[in-house]
Length: 113
Length: 112
Image (tube, rainbow over all chains, first blue to last red; front, side, top):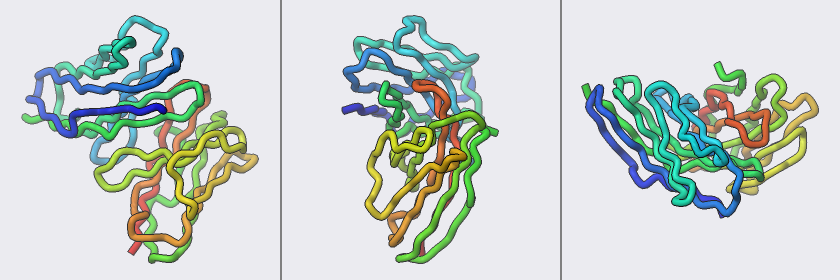
């Protein structure tokens, strides 16, 4: 069975600082994709970053980067130079060969001025 | 704008009633997914369709059903509604087998 676990229900960070959100997943498959989605107060689901499991290089999108540890089945999100607009729920997700995508419970991030 | 359209955006109804939520996927996307998000909760996978066929089923109640039509739009039918069915229902679509999902803005259902 595939599960995605986010162990931090809530986190906070000072504006301009760096924060890391944790995610672990469980799968026996070798080919899969991992994602981080952001859900601001508007409730819209916005893709932040994606990582293909067969790629060893960690994905980076501007201030967002991941630390993908395939053997440990860990996929953390680092947000650098945090901005007030980063305040949101962040969901980790995994998509396997059977095509469905499963989400973690989410981490509520608050960026403080 | 993700290109995924959901209607209605808001819906208020009474217990015991039936509602239908509609989703139009992005142009060219064959897969449609339905998720339920209760207040301050994560996204619960309900069901997935690919080109009209059911592909995967999650924690979908028997009172709920869905289908995908030849024009690829999808409908989620919720019947015998209960207070606990109040939630935000998301539709998402995808073109590839392992790519990201593109989400609609959701349909917020309130059952009174």
